[in-house]
Amino acid sequence: MKIPEIQIPIIPIPLEKNITLFIKREDLIHPEISGNKFWKLFYNINHYLEKNPEKPFIITFGGAFSNHIAAVAALGKESGVSTLGIIRGEELHGRWQYNPTLKTAADNGMEFRFVTRQEYSDKNQLTENLQIEFPHALIIPEGGTNKNAVKGIQYLLNNETKSFDYLCTAVGTGGTVAGLSRFAEQHQKVLGFKVVIDQSLEKTVAELSGKNNFDLIDAQDGGYGKITDENIRFINEFYQNFGIELDPIYTGKMMRKIFELIEEDYFPEKSRILAFHTGGLQGIEGANEMLRKKNRALIQFGK
Ligand SMILES: Cc1ncc(COP(=O)(O)O)c(C=O)c1O
Image (cartoon, rainbow, N blue to C red):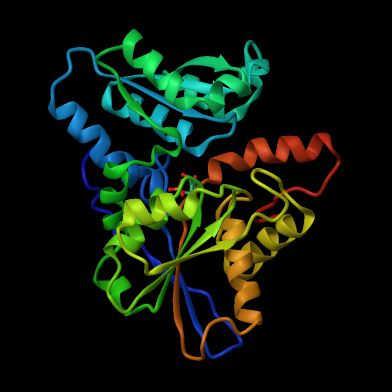
């Protein structure tokens, strides 16, 4: 993977309070390897390919709508690397064509193995078995989070991001917030907005970051993968007001919580807040299909 030449825009979100909020559009870094995924995969893939494996092969894990699965499949196609996705939920076997994330991943050359939720929950065992079966494969953990991923997150930060007091990101497996924490300036506070229930996140992030300049804030809003009506309303209004698309699982939940915190005067006056748009927009099609089946309001941009 090469460092893209694109200059990532940092867009102001006008507020009525004496607080400055900007959003850094990391989602624009690549059409398919979007946002934080690009940088979490960057060192993982490059280190592996530098070893010149004869038949490069990447295996990773994810749920049916996983942004990480979508990103790895696209990267496989772009780099000429075979990919295998270990997908949570055996019920998807034979039905994955109806899931837009998996359909696109398959079009990008990814093969799948569908495993039960129980098998999936023991990823250490799964990984061990896969590494025996495919000794030369690179096995990337769920969400891509590991030490190399954290190292890649440094590219989210640059001269322009130095003037901000707060750096904000959505948190799933913790690699992104750990990277921001590790590479932040000394005066910066990092806020991670947790969209999952995972008691071990604080520990994981602290270990990967090596610093204590971060706070993790609950932004689950109904639980991981759950999409409330308020969430949909917020995302649609955010688009109407600022012309920026957010996803319902990560960036929408983060941004809504940031707005709530601003409303509650969590941030001191004159604070400068930078929120990272970490992508995830590929999941909207699948989310809308689910919402349509339940006769619920849809996520709609530009209509
Ligand atoms: C759009 C989006 N934002 C944020 C995250 C959270 O990143 P992490 O798993 O590093 O906490 C993810 C997961 O990779 C994601 O897909």
